[in-house]
Amino acid sequence: MKTSIKEKVNGKITLEVELEAAEFQVAVNKAAKKLANKVNIPGFRKGKVPKTVLEKFIGNEAICAEAVDDILPNTYIKALEQEKIEPIDQPSIDMVQFEEGKPMVFTAEIPVKPDVELGEYKGVEVEHKNAVVTEKEVENYLGTMQQRHAQIETVPDKALEEGDTAIIDFEGFLDGEPFEGGKGENYNLLIGSGTFIPGFEEQLIGMQPGDEKEIVVTFPEDYQSESLKGKEVAFKVKLNEVKIKKLMPIDDEFAKDISEFETLEELKQDVENRLKKIAEQENEQQLRNKVLGKVAERCEVEVPNILIDRKIDDLIKEMEFRIRQQGLTLENYLKFTNSSMEQLREQYKESASTSVKVDLILEAIAKAENIEVTDEELDQEIEKIAEQNNQPPDQIKQYLLVQGRFDSFKESLTFDKAVRFLLEHAKVIEPQAGEAKAEETNKEEIKEEIKEEINKKE
Image (tube, rainbow, N blue to C red; front, side):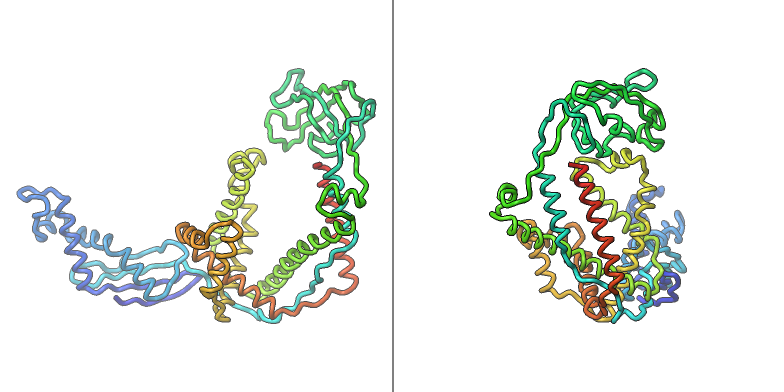
């Protein structure tokens, strides 16, 4: 078999394949026997029709076409192996010649991974600040723990305020008629949480246990229920109880009650250690992203749509897995968020494109630097996963093989190794004082927002 690459343009290789006449003749003879068992020709039993008679009955071209159908798939695979081509999608095949007594010739236009034009990827310079845990962050975390372990107390004759929990009965009416899903009894509502539609919680403030009130609100235009979008409704509400959080003082007793530590100082040290570990992990990821971003800016690669679509498929599968762990289906999630699969895919498109581009660049760098994952490193990673899942390493390896994920697992380890190579050769410099202060301020603001959100949910 002769193979040759005619051209490579826009991520596609045109491969020409020529199968020797003798080998193609063997396929033609086999095809004739197979067809002889299928056709009915007067005067002959099935399978006993001479080839010359069969040719007159169905034509030699039909026999040769059947031979092509039989032999083409295996011939194409062998041609790929011979030229060391790794396709990323199905080929477009054009039969050039398939006549008896002559070589079978065809061309295949094959989508492949695009060429990556690597820029200078070693020694990229990035500004990055080392992970630091401040005293304020420790205090904020302790405050969150204080909120989490707060005691909830019922307070009689107290006017409802923001931050209190209201125990209410309610029923909603649209045009004077009750609507589905608009009724609840002894419902726990944290005032200020934004759980109900805008305007509802604010109108409860000032009520006392036993009070009844009619509240008028308007559903948002983007509300999930079509029948309630933009509609004005009235709720009849009765306040049954008012509950408040009673916070424990943050002292040694607090540390004893909520942890295994005897003193507040020990608890603070543990919190600091945990925050530092998280901060270092986040910091390392940020550094990786900065270095990869700089490297990607210096590289040129045209990302094929087929690879982007596959990455989107992977991202949606991961999302569906997380949703199922919460007891939902993807179909229900799309319904609740009032979105479609097309919109979801569009949301993932940019991140998928970036991810594929980075993978292609890392693959090219690994090849250029002869970066490979050894069998020993592979076994070590499998052992780590096995230990985390409390399963034998052989079982993890078998699972990867059965699921067809072993090669992609090894590839991901190769990419990680390539990233470590880039980090080792990067020039990391501390940001200027003003920039560092701005970064720290922004970090603190984000932490405060997170804390407020946690408090609301609690």
